[in-house]
Image (cartoon, rainbow, N blue to C red; front, side, top):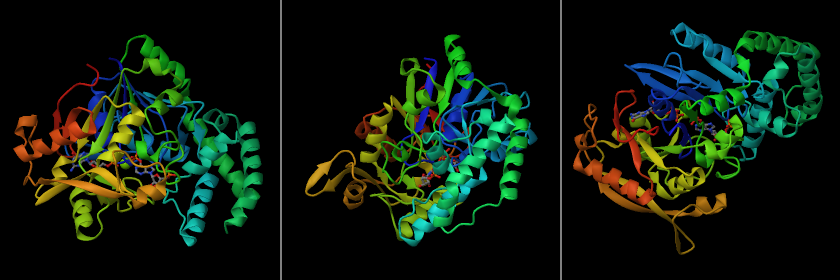
Amino acid sequence: MSVVIVVGAQWGDEGKGKVVDLFTERANVVVRYGGGANAGHTLVIDGKKLVTHLVPSGVCHPGKSCVLGDGMVIDPHTLLEEIADCQSKGLLARGELLIGLGAHVILPYHKLIDGLREDHGAKRGKSIGTTRRGIGPAYEMKAARRGVRMRDLLRFDRLRDLVTANLDDLAPVITHLGGTVPTASEIAKWIDEAAAAGERLRKHTGDAGRHVANAIAKGEHVLFEGAQGCLLDLDHGTYPYVTSSSTIAAGACQSAGIGPTQIDSVVGITKAYATRVGEGPFPTELHGAEGERLRQAGGEFGATTGRPRRCGWLDLPALRMGARLSGMQSLALTKLDVLANLPEVKVCVAYRLDGKELDEPPTDPDDIARAEPVYTKFPGWGKLPSDARDFTDLPATARAYVDTIERMAGVPFCLVSVGPDRSETIRLRDPFA
Ligand code: GDP
Ligand code: IMO
Ligand code: MG
């Protein structure tokens, strides 16, 4: 197998960064395929932490080709900061980064509108709880065919005309949302800064689709790194409480411009429990002390915004839906250690709604919010040995938990993670094998 897609199976933050870093050992090319700096992917290697937002999480393996696909929305200033941070750590030393010229660009007005919409919505109890990174507005402009792409950053006349036209369109929206329309000199400054950022990024830009297709044709191992999670997918997630891109495995083909027949394997990542950031239905959410315990034990604070994540028990109906949407052939289970020392651990095995038991979430978000979780209880397992590297190193009760989830989700595990560090991993199967 040579082409593997890694996707979040829940609502994001499942540990994709850690797993992509591990799998990159076997890959030649690592491709981020959707979203932008709304993502925050954490890697911990020998106790040292790195959070990636735009750069693929394969970056810690020198010499691997890191690609930002055409389906992404890229904030050039954030990307430059991230490249500088990586280079200060001795990474990307050989400039092994390729940014698709077709990727869209996030400019200050996308972030302005994102924030204004959130504030305006909050007053009416209708905010999404976005990361305010400009993701939604950038994808809106893309769909409206008024977006600015990486290639436009490199052509000053085009950039100036596009930004000027965008702000003509957006001025009434900004006013309606209670914002201040930027002045001509502010707009000119944004254009100059964007053009300068484009110049600095120019040497990294190119035809990302051809690069990935050529690598596949040569039989190289290509790893696609999903952002967010399947239940945040624009088409299939808990709409409208979703992000604005295709987060499921199919998004990799869309973004990179390769056909679905090229994909050999899809790996989903799930925590041993569930978290969600922002608004939207979350049937297994734990309020009060139980939720707080998981939040503290799991360090569940956003890697991008620092917001406390909502925490709850593992939700198998949601996981089954994620597995179906992405055609997952295996799952990586993360954060099993966080459930240590609990008297009992619960798993939601079905939803009860209007007297019926459902094995997947209903399609209407209001129905998901009304659904009552049906739980199975497991005895707790005390502390997990942090040096567990073989499944048999785990206590019998923890193994029973993992085996039951695997059976009830209907997807086999390829990896169990027992701590944030790269080394704290039980490898069960190589996804490239
Ligand atoms: P991503 O967005 O899917 O890459 O996930 P995030 O990086 O946003 O959040 C996952 C968090 O869990 C990070 O702080 C990781 O370092 C951490 N993490 C990953 N796997 C494990 C694990 O098995 N145990 C523990 N305790 N932490 C983990
Ligand atoms: P990673 O890749 C968790 C959530 C936001 C909000 C919704 C829409 O680190 O798993 P957006 O800014 O995208 O318009 O916000 O999506 N969200 C994430 N939640 N992890 C992420 O990324 C997320 N990216 C977006 O909290 O609810
Ligand atoms: Mg994250």
